[in-house]
Image 1 (cartoon, rainbow over the protein chains, first blue to last red):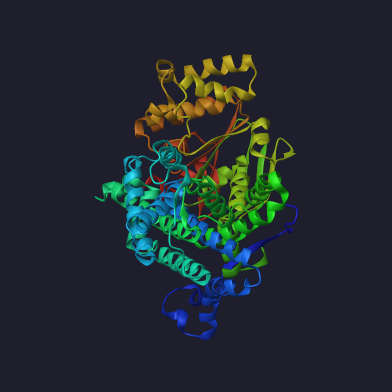
Image 2 (cartoon, helix red, strand yellow):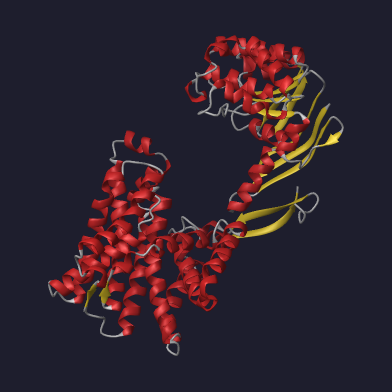
Length: 340
Length: 248
């Protein structure tokens, strides 16, 4: 309250309705079009140019690939948590299943890479959905626990039964023909997924998803099967994760149990917190910030996690709404002091 | 004893309370009447300090910007901007809208939780008083708060507020969702409480019919401003109040 002025209050006004609306008015002038397009183009072009900028630093090109893979998971997490109402810790499951499915088709059946990745995306997504199906009717923490349990279980099963190469993993996957393919396939599909999801949550189906999150009993009372829609939501999120996992396996040319590592479950959540939940673009931005930070922090050795935790805590305490919500509010609204 | 002047509350740019002043003397019952969205609950939250807490949470989560201006004094002390817990310690106790019973604690536990600020002796004494004024509660002391009926829950909520040893009791919509018979019975109990416990009571309510006869002074809120104020007879004889609240 210290900075508040006597007898005044800070008023926030939305920018003109024409500018903010996504309707036909928004294309009535260049100024308004550029107002809407500027932030979107900044993200799209920025990401597309990034590999070219990073040519002198091949190590950071690899980091960019990891950023994209985490971004798939973070998008899936944000979608499930803030639009379907399921808190999923299954990032590791999605990556692992995607990696093993694509490795199975590529190494054991000899299918080409451009067929393996889509197959892994669809079949992997279906497999994850089937695994998580039994706990879909439940609300609350149960889904989180079960989705956290599956990656641990799968890793131990593969190790104990010595299937799919056991602890060595499956080696000898086809790689991408060059690193440009790796980067641009991941970046472009990540952007497509981002904008497709943003559109989906505002379509009719997205309304049902949000209804399931807000009040599932009311949705049931409208004659809609919430389990089916939750399953569709999980399928979408896990397909995104499986696509990331399949690409990861082809980039490393190897699928192993370290792809069930819990990092894949935890970092997307952190990125969603940093970027702002429920915005979809926020988690992507969160990944763009967090993953490079975690690479930079490698110099700290074991203190890495401590520093990382401090940064996260700072974000939660001082900007708990997330960067994206904060930024879009500043971008879309005027602020000024008025007399009461 | 209790005075509030010039209360202004903005939800973002919407004016929820516009320059509302209100005062309440010792052992008085003051009524605040208004339709939905007139600002009754906002007023109660502002007086009890909960609004400061809501504003802080909204600010941290980047939600609505809530601006609160004005002045509140209680027994000669400035209470504006004082934390809700400190206001409760000073004796301003809110009995919130829709009761907010602890659903997984028994009736007795609910009452004991609220006795946190009271001494052991006060707790015993108030507990006895609550059971004498609300006899239905004596039979269900071990039932969970969530399983009570609406009327029982409201009795428990008022009893719980009494356990905190109020000097000023804020009742926010105590009659919400109750049958007319219970409404009148509860209104009678409220009057008894004011007399027997020597507390001042501010009661915000939509249903003026049961409450109006028990008040000493009243305010009519409309769109966030106190449009009419006066003692019981003045309000009851006001033609606008009659047509709006008594349907005649």
